[in-house]
Length: 211
Image (tube, rainbow, N blue to C red):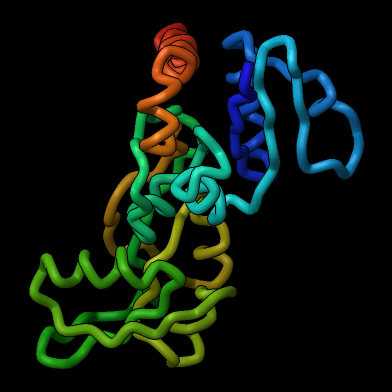
C-alpha cells in the first residue's frame, strides 16, 4: 500500500493537529519521541508524516510532495496555492487585522502606508475599499514600523493582542478570521479519494464532539 504523505506545520499548531490525526486512527508513535527527525512513518496504517515550516506546507501539498497537509487560512489567502481546502479544523484561531498607533487618524486624501508580511491580503483588502495604498513588505517585527514612522498602519495576524498593546498599537479593523485548514493535493484527492475522505470525516466528527 502506497504511503499517504502528510505535511504538518512545525510547532504548537502541528502538535495539536497531529493529535487529531492520531485520534482519527492515523497514529505514528515515533512522532512523539523526543528526537530531531523530520519524517515519521507507520506502515501499518499507511501514513508518512513530515514537519515543515508552516508557510511551506501549502507548497509541499500543491507540488505533490505531500498528499494532504494543514495550513493556516492566512497562507492560503496570501499565496493562493492550487489545492483543495477540505476542512476548517477550528484550531490555531486568530485574525488578520489592521493595527495602528492609538492616536492615528486616517486621511483618505493621502496614500496610506501599510507595513505587512501579507502583501496580497493587504492589497486586496484595500482594493475592495478603493483605498490608495503604498505597501511596505517586511519579514519580521512589523509592530515597530508605525512607531518609527515607516508606515501608518500594519496588516498582521493578531492572536491575543499582547504584542500590539506592549507597542502601544491598537486594532483598527479585522480583515478576516484565521484558522487551520486541512488541504489536499488535487491529483492525490482524485486518486486516493477514499483514504483522504476517511481522514476528513474522522476529523469532522471530532469537531462535532467539541463543546
